[in-house]
Image 1 (cartoon, rainbow, N blue to C red):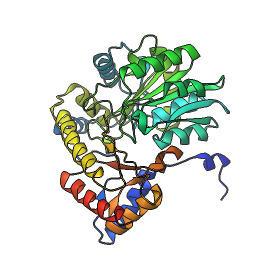
Image 2: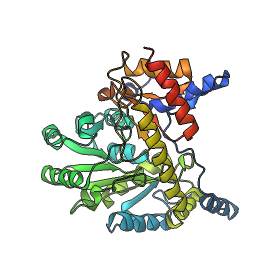
Image 3: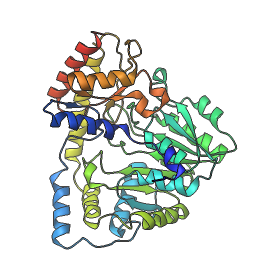
Length: 387
């Protein structure tokens, strides 16, 4: 079988590959502590599940408009106004099965062969994958530990050329847990306006912040027509398997994204969209409890990592990942991640799963119980200090 050449440019998400290997080891009887997958370990709140159950009972199982049901699009407009202080209209909103289509579809609609897209590295691997798949040039902006994994604004400005079409930002950030401050976002907006480029702002972790406040570039002046806001329900509401996300963007682009939806998915499941309305308009007590528990786990994990000889770890400001520096450990990131999985059953990701600037780091998700986190830290200490 001959495959199209473009398939050679398509990357993957290593978290799912490592999860598959870890599950295979579990099937052989080995106990695995899962710190590799970016998935809350909580159940979806009951009131959201009840909304979906009621929708199913009422026959909400048919086709919907490609861009989403009007009720959910309106609820998203209300949420954007409430959280970001920006008035948007339903025609700015596209609902998708998961948030990844809001990476794939806008990049497909906007980027021509040879157009440049600046993206954070280390960063979510699907950014680079999709840019290269459509024939664009992926331009990495290195996130540095000494800057708390925030943007170096001078380096950002230096990377912009006449071929730059799009900048991707992600805050809180995967894999580092870094957060862009309000001043960072304001300065990025100034650069974007001056250079006349668009921004894809990935804000799926916006509700999972600790000591900091989430700052959205959409809230900055004159950014509504320059911003593609990516958001979803998976992380905040523990709805990973529901596959529900959305984008907020200029209406002209939303029309193109709807056309791509028609050509690929037709629409997002109706009863899942009803659950999304319940999530946005319902109580947030459980979500607040999720975040408080993540903060407790974060502190335990950071403290434990910093007690391992050769390892140092910044305290992440958001999301549910630690990104410890292992450059003083006598082993590169990928071999060490493999060793931890195969020898002591601790599944983590190599920093290189998130780009070339991830070498010398591991990514650990603390979306697991405190008991498992503490056991994993003991096992990691045992392995790393024996090298």
